[in-house]
Amino acid sequence: MNPQEDQLLEPGLRYLMLELTSRCNLRCVYCAVSQPDFHGLDITLGFERLRTELSSEGPIEIQMNGHGETTIVRNWEVLARELIEDGHRLSLTSNLAIPLRAEELAVIRKMQRVTVSLDTCDPELLARLRRGSRLEKIEANLQRIRAGPGAPYVAINCTFTDRVMEGLPALVEWAAAHDLQCVALTNLVEYPQIDPDMSVRHPAEVDPQRALELLRRARTRAAELGLDFHAMDGLQELLVEASARWPAA
Amino acid sequence: MARRLSSIPQPGETRDCLDPWNTVLLHANGDVSLCCWSKPVGNLHGSTLPEILRNAQSTQLRRTLLSGELIDDCRDCPARGLVSRGALKVKVEELERDAHNRAELRRWRAHAQVLETDLIEQRLHNATIAADLEQQKLHNATMQADLAQQKLHNATLVKELGSLRPHADVLAADLEQQKLHNATIQADLAQQKLHNATLQTDLAQQKLHNATLAKELGSLRPHAELLESDLAQEKRHNTTLLTDLTQQKLHNATIQADLTQQKLHNATLAQELASLRSHADVLAADLEQQQLHNRTLALELAALRPHAATLEAELATLSQHAQTLAAERDALAKHAANLEAEKAALEKALGRGLLGQLRRWTAPLKRMLGSG
Image 1 (cartoon, each protein chain N blue to C red):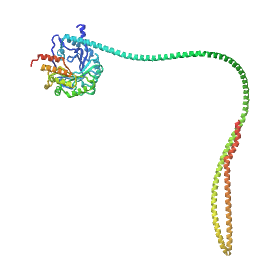
Image 2: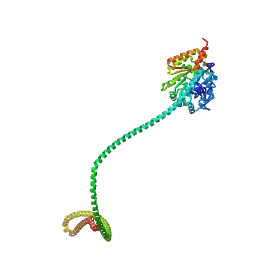
Image 3: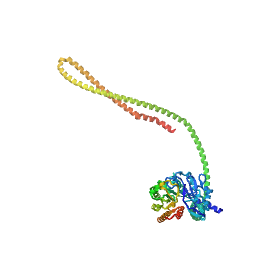
């Protein structure tokens, strides 16, 4: 590459995903954390060092998530508040399965966005998929977040599997009913099945056409309800490709 | 092992991904990845974030995306779609411009912050200067007012000067007269000096007279000493008199005690007298009975004449005894009167007699001391 092209290799950091822990309070059937050989740990860097490193490229957008659940890390909200004070824009991804403390609520209300990991609004299915999660607890936390002043943008993040695809339109309705702003879909990475009674598969391998149809309906309904709707780029492409190859029923 | 389901890139295609340029995933163990799906390119326990973002692995990852020669992680990526290499290059160029613009923005923001600080300081400084200016204006106004007053005062002074000039001529004439008056005063002064010389002569004579008086005083001093000696003797005499007086008072007290005893004795005597009188009455009654008896006996006298003679003798004795008692009573009354007289004389002597005598004795002494 010539020098001009070398210039194109320079980083321009804007987003940072901060994994404060790889431990989790849930054991979702499709997640790497639930694998028998997975060992979680909390971050091995001190908060002060983290602040220094995260500010080294100027103010950025920091999303607090990773394999684990951020809110189980002690004093996570203190670090979050300090990072906001340093000029960064913060977002949080959480399963909201644990009742939030007042200090946590206070810092969450200063964030740009909260993404709630929720695949379905069917309580029984949720409990079986995301083992340890209870819909009523999530609803209670969401209500508290939305109730206070300065509530952030709240999105639902759904790992799109054959188990939940039929419930996608209902999930959009549920999100609107709870005054949320967005529903987003994540592409499934398949790990070895850990629960024979609750195995999950990628919709592209089960019924990509049906999945695309549900995706379209959910997107349309979201638009009608004033909700944002996003499907991960790779998911959409994969379903289209698989659908093209899919034999007609 | 995880299985990723993803679209398969065709020749000339690459992943539609800017993550290695603008995204970092910081793992709990300190590993730094440039997206959610690729392997770490460094660890914060050994390097800083800026170092990792610019190290060979990071640069190589970006290069493969641009060239379309994807590593396995990118080829199997489930999160991003596919795009032509040219389209990705355009996106990266836009990203670089954006990064450059953001850096410029940061730089300008920092500069703006400095300017803002300067502006605040400048505003403060301006406020101080404005305050000073206001004070200066006030001061100038005060000075102008003073100047106007001074001008008025000067005009007044000029006017007064015009009116004072005739007065100055009068004062000059007065001065001439004063000079003449001073000459007269000097003549008087010469006379006063002569008078002073006379007074000095008188003073010398007075001094001589004073010396004579001092000499006389020297001769009078022995006399004064004699008077002092007399005075001392008089004082001693007074002391003696005071001692005598004290003794006299004691004597009077003794006499008064005796008088009290005498009064008690008189009372006793009066009591005895009263009892004697009673006895005398009894005796008189007896006498009357005796006389009756005598008369009875006279009747018996004839027969008892010797016994009658005896009874008569007894009657005479008793009468004599009654007379003796009466004499004694009179003597005691006289003695009491004498004591009362003595008491009155002593009280008079103590109250006035002795004090008067003392005053008469001390009067000449006082006169002598006063003339000394």
